[in-house]
Image 1 (tube, rainbow, N blue to C red):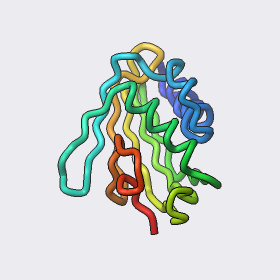
Image 2: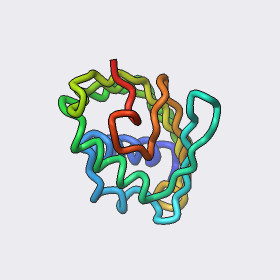
Image 3: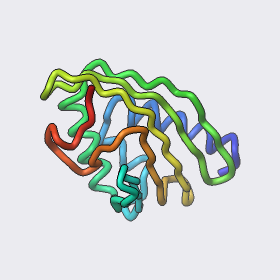
Image 4: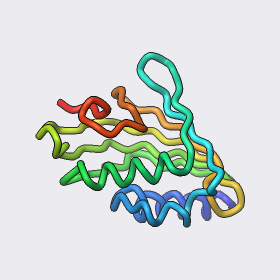
Length: 137
């Protein structure tokens, strides 16, 4: 993909996967053998795979209401892009408010994401299902 195509892909990923928390759309955007990394506050890294993305989207759809993605940057080059957005939502299990800056870095292989990295302004466990895995205020 050239830079223009990559930018369009990034916008579609955000609109069709992340914003609606559509786990069924993951297969259209991610390779099955995708590898991801999420940096934790203690500087450790969680290694992620395809199923972790699907499970995260399913969990977020069940537990996040009134989500808002305030996109601040989309930077695209040939076969790679970065997304930075502010994310807010109501966290249903505790009644708390999620308020986090997310920064994703993606590498595209062919026509889908082959690897990605995630940095966030607050610590959370990408793989957790439960109130202890989500930062709220």
